[in-house]
Length: 195
Image (cartoon, rainbow, N blue to C red; front, side):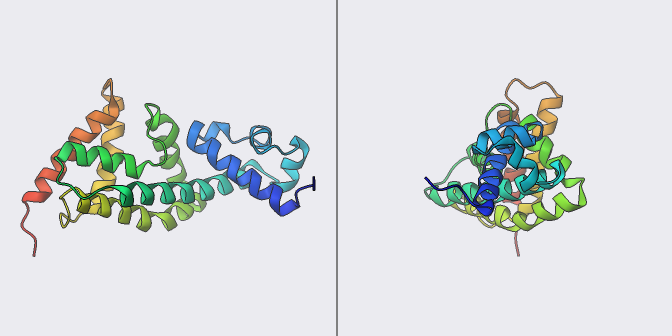
């Protein structure tokens, strides 16, 4: 068995960091945890990424690539069918937060995304993936019978805001509560004349 090259070990670390970030959130991104997940000796981790910030930036970059790929896959696999606004909103949530929309969605996914948005370097990384994520939302809207409602950026913002509000309001299922709010927006947008 050959020893992985420095570049291969770095790629293993980045992939492991992205997986940990998506599954557990930012606190999981430590040199030791990522090295363990990557199967790399702990001592190598600091050599490959001198600081936690450098490791975290690589994790965010890779996690955003995973997110875009998963969101695109969800959207493109969706069969074209007229759906009601709540079902469509649920699919939008699933797409926007792909690949994982478990009950810890706000704590593990949304809060770290908001924190990253406050950091200029990480915000720039996330901004690169936003157009492709918005395109995935447009695909979902189109395949659910809401094509042409426009305002995809507003819908994306409403997905985030509705989840945060639902958690703050103590909703038992924040995802369902958020889907209901986004559904109201979809119904309103569908009534607005275009052109």
